[in-house]
Each structure stands twice: as C-alpha cells, then as structure tokens.
Length: 88
Image 1 (cartoon, rainbow, N blue to C red):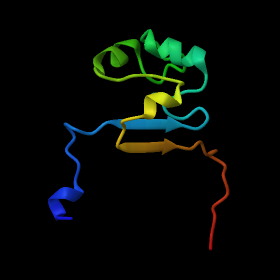
Image 2 (tube, rainbow, N blue to C red):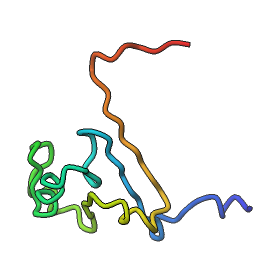
Image 3 (tube, helix red, strand yellow):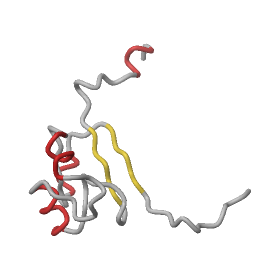
Image 4 (cartoon, one colour):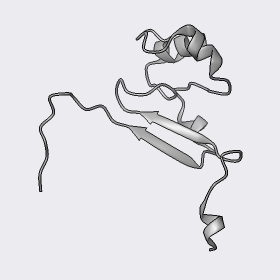
C-alpha cells in the first residue's frame, strides 16, 4: 500500500459519530432527541437552531443500519468532570 493510499479524501469519506450517553449529536438512542434534531432543534441548547440549519448534509439516526457505508467512525464516551485520574 502506497502512502497516498493510506489517506482518505474528505470528498469520499462518510463519517459516523456514535454517541454513548449524552455526548454527541448524530447518533442517538433517544428517539425523541433524534426526532428533535431532525426537525432542527437541539433540546440541550448547546447548538442553536440556526447553527443546525447551517450544517448542511448531516443526518441523525437511532438505527444501526445507517452506519453501513461509513468508512470513518468516531465514538464519543461520556466522562464526568470529577472522574479520577487513572495512572499506570
């Protein structure tokens, strides 16, 4: 594999963000939250309706089948602010 083959072009990349818990937007098990995001509203108010409208080609889903065809996966994992510092 050549070095140029190792890099994906953003034009041909399909990203999936998988949210575990409250973190993240595009993939949510909470169907009411997913439906609200599809309608252009973030109930957490972290993102305004105008900002959501500006995003463009973004899909929200609670269906695992929508992960098919993705070639980049980002998994978000919630951590508490007071989480202990782990040391080896």
